[in-house]
Image (cartoon, rainbow, N blue to C red; front, side, top):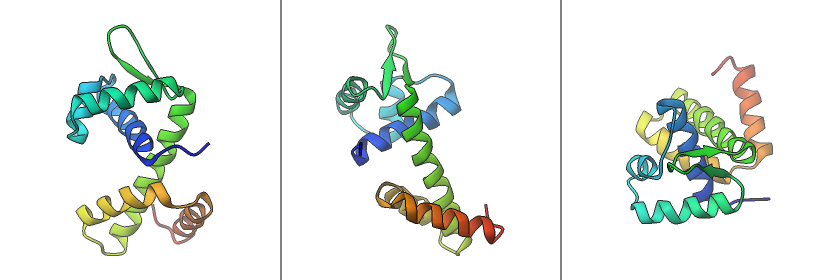
Length: 124
């Protein structure tokens, strides 16, 4: 099932914040993405109802196995694509911004081809 780009972005953000801080709440996501807390709350409700996250009674957010799978895919794509663009000489900030857009629309086939090429070329 294909999920919306915004959901992928939220899941990736939860993944990154949980790696960095250990635990994540809606306010952490709002601050990280510079979004309104109300927007994040609606998104978290949708992600919870669709089985991508769980939220405990204290408001801490945890990725479910399905949510973690999506988040890790987005994180891997973002990391590899931004590294690739930087190695090609693209300014770091531009590379990160472009990778963020590309990661949501690139097919698995194309991404895997880029990943294979970078590995064979001795890149990241």
